[in-house]
Image 1 (tube, rainbow, N blue to C red):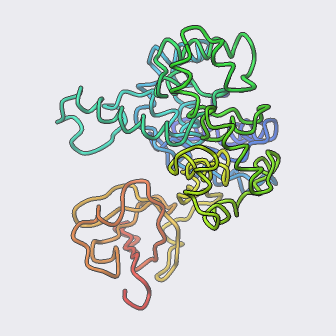
Image 2 (cartoon, rainbow, N blue to C red):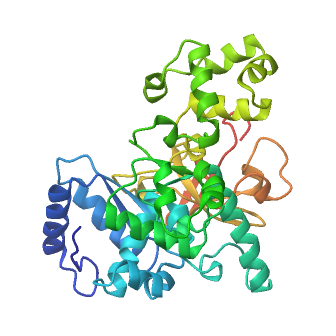
Image 3 (tube, one colour):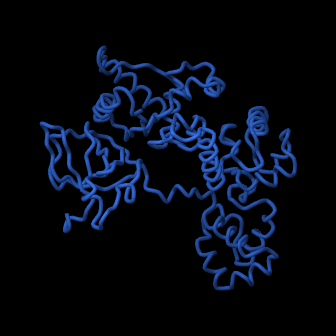
Length: 381
């Protein structure tokens, strides 16, 4: 929507000029979250943004995002296709911001070797690594479902029944004819026949479409059964849109899943899937995870005091503990003995990189720039 280049850090340190540019962008585009890459000058950029946010009336937060592989994506053929008018740096910036919006959709565009998925990723046969990661991505994409009106062809290609060619055709059809208003329009896309549609339809979502079931995981072949289920228990399609079906599961259970499935002429597993989807239409299983920690200020080492409780993000897990980013220049160490009230064999049994954790400050050594943290309850620490 807009681009600008700022120089808030050394050697140029054009702080005031940079602030004016960022403030203009925040006001113009009603920005509420700023993504900062964790690469070169990340901490200096974070300090610059934190100071700027104190000067503006808008409620804006920021978050530091992993930029592993962003430079690989930005120089790729795919990035050039997506943003032909942008230079490599601008494409990297878009990738970093998109990782905050939809990490899965962005990370699938990067070769697994460039993501930084583990300590020994280069020791594996790369074909095997690609295959294993491809399988995991496929599972994730099909479990969450994708918005057919916003998904890139890279993301669409992981949907069952859709390959790269048909994924590109979907995007092309969307560009030429506008947004899809229902799933059935897929059959008008070249190279998508009845078989491919049957495989793919349940994984594609059409938010705001004419048919409310199109924004759920209910497959088109089960629409009739889903509609009958609603009327059986006194609900309508508008109740699905309004989210009024929280009691549907308990009502079906009272009536007996086997009995209801028999009346509808479907299997019990299908009935359970339909109930789950109708209770939470457009549900994203990632909603059950803790949200990322958004900040609007930055602490310094001197601000930290013993017993201070903070929320942080696990940045690294090693044999003797975990390093946690709590928003200061230095990551704090949670020693293996402080990770849990119970005995911990290895830190990876308790935490993993990216986890959001609550920690308490044990001690701070300003001279040596060391922070000791604990995740144990206060009575046992």
